Structure formats: C-alpha cells, structure tokens
Length: 497
Image 1 (cartoon, helix red, strand yellow):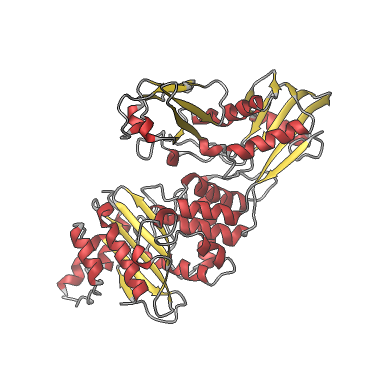
Image 2: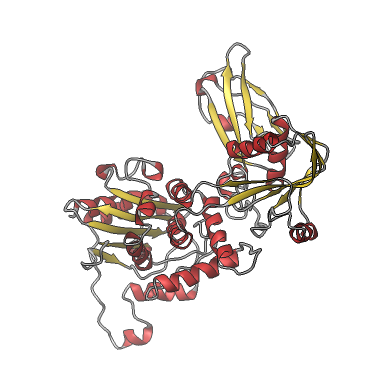
C-alpha cells in the first residue's frame, strides 16, 4: 500500500483522535468516535478492512442539518476515479455546459480540378471524443469540398496540448489497456484499435475486422475456429502478437461459441496513432496522397501562424468540426470513468486560464487552474492534491469533507442538473448497474477503483424526501473486497436508518 507523506499521516493521526505525544502525556481526553452503521461495520469486518482505513460522510445536500454520519472526514485519501467529480464540475462551472472543442482542416496550397498542390493541415483542438465515425465524416467533407488528391503531405498540428511524455504503461505496467491512453490535442478514437471477431462456420474461421483503418498496419483478416465449441478466455486463446506496430497476428484460435465479440485495445505505438488513422481513413474513403502524414515542426507552425493559415483567414479551404458539447462529454467521463477524456478536461482548464493567442494545455497549467478555481469556489475547505484530474494516480488526494462541500456547492449551482445527470444511477446504468440494487434509481454515484482503493461519492434520495451527499473512501490492500460496505452505506443513506 502507498505510504502517505508525513503531512497526510499527521492529518490521519489527528482525525483518529490520537493526540501527539506531548498531549498524551497530559492525558488530554479523546473525543468519542462516531458509531458506524452496523451494516457498514459488518461489511468492513467481512472484508478484513480496519475502520482506520475508511472515511465516510453522509450529510444533507442543502446543508440545513448536521451530518448524519461523519467518520474521519477530514483525512485526505486517494479517491481513485472519484476525483473526476472535481474535474468535471470545475469544467462545467468554468467553461459552461455548451462548451465545445474544435478540429480544423485547412488547405495550405492551391486547388485545381480536385488536385491540392501543397499540404492539408489538420489542427487538433483537444476534442475528447473524435471517434472513427466523426473523423471519417470530416475527411469525407474535405473530399466533398473538392480535394481528391493531395500532392504534398497531411500535416498535423497537435500543439494545443503539451505532448505526453509519460510511458503508457508507467502507471501499472499495462500499456495496451485503453484506460492508459495518454491525452493528445488530436486524439483519434481514444488511441484505441477495435478488433471485431465474427465466426464463419462455412469457412471454419472467424473473420477479423479492424477499426479504424491504419496506414502501415497489417492485421490477420481471420483466425481458425477452435475444435471445441466452448467460450472461455477467448482473448488469451487467440495468442495475439501485439508488440509490432506494423503487424497484428494470431497464433491461436477462436471459438464459435463466443459468437461475435469486440476487443478494444491500445495501439503499440500511440505516438503514430493519429497519423496512421488519418491516412488510413483518407485512403479508405478514396482519397489519394503522394506524400505522408506527419506532425508539423515548431518552425512550420510559426510560419503557418504568421501567414494566417492556421487561423483560416488566408486559407483557401477551412472546415471546422465542433465536438459534442461539454455536458455530453462529462456524462461519458463520469458514467464510464473515461480517464483520457477526464485528462482532456483538465488540460483544457489549464489552457483556458492562460493568456495569449496560442495557449497550451499542460499538466502544470491544469493544476494551477484547478487550485485557483477551488480557492475561489470553496475558500474555507482544504484543496485536493491534483495530478492529472482523472484519478488514475497514486498521489491525488482529497478529504471526504472537501469533496462533500464541493458536491453541496454543485447541487445548488447553475449546472446542477447537467452534473447530476452525468452520474451513474444505482442499479440502472454504467459503473453502478450491478451495485446498490436495493435502492435502484435512488442514488447517483461516481465510483472509483484502483489497487488498494475503492470509493463512491454522489447523491442519494432519502426515503423521507431529503437528498443526501454520500462519500465513502477506503484505502487498504483489501479495498476491493470492501465494495459491499460502500453499497451498504448508500443503502443506509437512502433508507434513512
């Protein structure tokens, strides 16, 4: 388990009612510990999680009543993906629910009879959800505007965000997991390939379809069907070779009993994903390209700005494609706990806060922007320790008291409905579909899970009509086994026992 810095360990000691040594010598009386709800205490005991590893808070969302339960709420804890609540509410509050990101295509050259003599520039604006369908619709629009052949290059401008420097596998050694995708100003399909396997009994093989089409990547178009019609660990049975960015091969087999299955996976060479996907899609749509798809150099970007090309003022062709509105993006972030989308919000907040014509979203700017926003919005509450804003971090920290205070402010804000609508509903959808079914439809909770961490936070409608804020965070090696304790906490809040 991660060892907390000295400041946090001292805070934890204080929250447990254990005075420093000098105070113990004076026999300072301890404050009585609040009793945990029996159903919660029993679930923690079954999971072998000590109460000292838990922080719980249940309070009236209006703030008119004292908390129903307040246990170690001032202790900073790792909240895992529950930290996305801070990032998404800050984004809604600062940028507004209708905010959009823009992807721009510009022609840097002359066009005659469908032939572009020069380059096509694709300028990323940080769209968190430029999926395959939207990318191909944009490129089809370019072709419909008259560009059929590019005698030059497709040049990518990804300068809106600082280039990611972290190794995709740095967090947990799983670089090919889609949740480890790094942010990118020109993020295409979350930098993920999607392989679809469809059994074809007549040929004795499963057909393989790949999206998006990737320039320079060969994928086996089929795999033999297994002799035994049993669907087990079908991904392992494929014996897939994924390390080569130019080739994906299958040495195993696929069972027809699995039916059609989809396998999303991160690409082995994420830095080239956008270039390969754009070239592959351009050619798949019938477009021709004599050059290559490449990133613009810093000097080239300066020239394009100086000439007025990037702004579109002096470009012969300019096509702008806005993203989905922020309210929709926030729903995806919170309901499905999408890490890279959350990091895009975080970087966008940093970019938005900077002056000048060409601000850049960086982690440092994101942390600074969140700190300023928190101080302005919640000046009397301890600010969270932010890393990347997604919760996919071992250093992010927030106390239940601070998180609950933010949820209280959010519930009374102009964006309250958009924020609450983004949360998974107990027993109904997303990450809460199979949880807290005893109170189906009555709790709206963001979940969080890492090794040694499980957490929930959100709102619950009490049986008597009161809306409660519920926060529960567990930091312990057995945290995963203690999820029933947090579900019991939600149920306890709704049933008002």
